[in-house]
View (cartoon, rainbow, N blue to C red):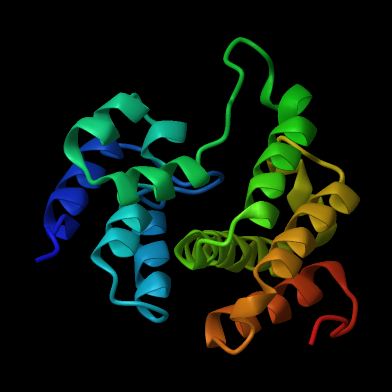
Length: 193
């Protein structure tokens, strides 16, 4: 019988993200992992996937360590959280490491055959793209001034690469929405079928 971690992951994420706000807003950060979890839930009922969705930013954006995740959750959850955790290279400005961090994680996404990793990535980037699109409607291309990487061409490369590397999920409404939002923000056509 599969061990269930969802409730524990929810409490863990609530504690880890307490007091955090989303970039450029007063919105509680916790709403992002909850949205990612909801998007994942539209594609799967996997306890590991839903739990990892709640935890996906804890190591990258809080004081939680990968060892904390390993000590409390299953190997499958750990693998999923690791897939979403960049090497931030502490001590170096995020803007100076953006290119290499994104390339490293995209290389891993491209190489994986784990469908739950792809679902988690899609859900996370769809949540991000929903926020980005909202900013785009308010600010146009000036929205990139809020980001570590201010070059819209590099941002486009990143988000279109995720679209390409998750294209096996193209029949899911989440992927179709992601594609529409990427095209709305960056322009373009439906080159991926």
